[in-house]
Image (cartoon, rainbow, N blue to C red; front, top):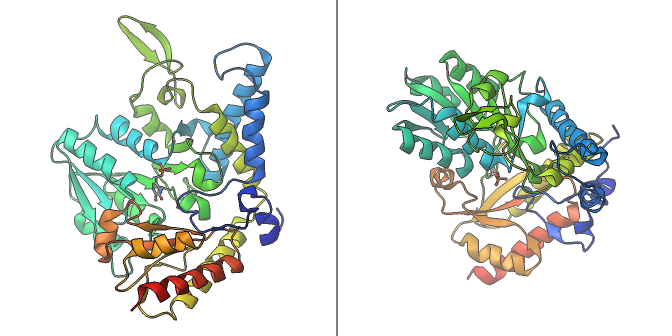
Amino acid sequence: MNAFNPAQFRAQFPALADAGIYLDSAATALKPQAVIDATQQFYSLSAGNVHRSQFAEAQKLTARYESARDQVATLLNAPSGKNIVWTRGTTEAINMVAQSYARPRLNAGDEIIVSEAEHHANLVPWLMVAEQTGARVVKLPLGADNLPEISQLPQLITPRSRILALGQMSNVTGGCPNLEQAIAIAHEAGMVVMVDGAQGVVHFPADVQRLDIDFYAFSGHKLYGPTGIGVLYGKSHLLDAMSPWLGGGKMITAVTFDGFQTQPVPHKLEAGTPNVAGVIGLGAALEWLSGVDIAQAESYSRGLATLAEDALAKRAGFRSFRCQDSSLLAFDFKGIHHSDMVTLLAGYGIALRAGQHCAQPLLAALGVKGTLRASFAPYNTQHDVDALVDAVDRALDLLVD
Ligand code: PMP
């Protein structure tokens, strides 16, 4: 692996050739040429479907498709590619756990503990399954440091607590709770833990065995891969225990009008023709990433966020919601609506996001209606920081009386 070189890293992203100021990587990352090439080659050169046909090209494609599972297993230190289920993304993975694992096991009065910092993708599926089963969603509140208050977990756990849903890294504050501690407490009480890794995987992929994670989900598109492909990792006995959510081709071994028998995992949970291009593209992203020093790249992008925060902090009314020196910088200016600010920034060519970031309970706990969020990636530069600060100054000139 080579030392991280910001200019070389940036040069691999054709979308940056027009020198746009892209500060929205937490929503979706730009794609390196290696991923674009792999996806294009798949569509231009590959023939056949996976797991269906006998001809050589289709067999080759199936082998490549399956080996991408092993790449994901390596990224997460999962025991095997068999622990990796392809999904459309984090959202689908968590819904799958809620519907295929939790729903058949939850009874009225059972409890699902969900942190207040969660993205809606790790809250709404639990609210839905609670409505379907009579279970209750219990809030693990945010603490003074804007992280879920893990120390409150033991008091919240009752004999009816079944599941803990917790994000590895907040998509708003960038805060990372102590997963190891939370998982140990939940396991002590016999609970199953769902970790939303959508943001965390980009910065520090979790070691699912070391952390003893039961279920872990992430999306390819935030990790420089294509949209429409994601991952559910599950411990083998938990995936085995799941009943398929979708039925159809390739998830069965035998079907009659009297019933069907399912394939072993992971195929039992992957009915129908999968997103082959997405898997190939994600495989290419992981291959490409294996040559990047993620820790160095992370400290570089955190440094950019710190520069931006320090510069913006000199402007009157600036408030930061950034946790733990994250590469995400959520902020606002007291008395200025985030929508007004983001509209002006967009006009000045700065791509970032404002609003509730699909985390309305978190925003309510922070006591704000919305924030702006500049998310820095290793392809950003000091020039991007300066452009953001400059654009904010122009906006403040217009917005402040
Ligand atoms: N969880 C977190 C923390 C996220 O940031 C996101 C994406 N914004 C999701 C879940 C959902 O990911 P997707 O839309 O790719 O399913």
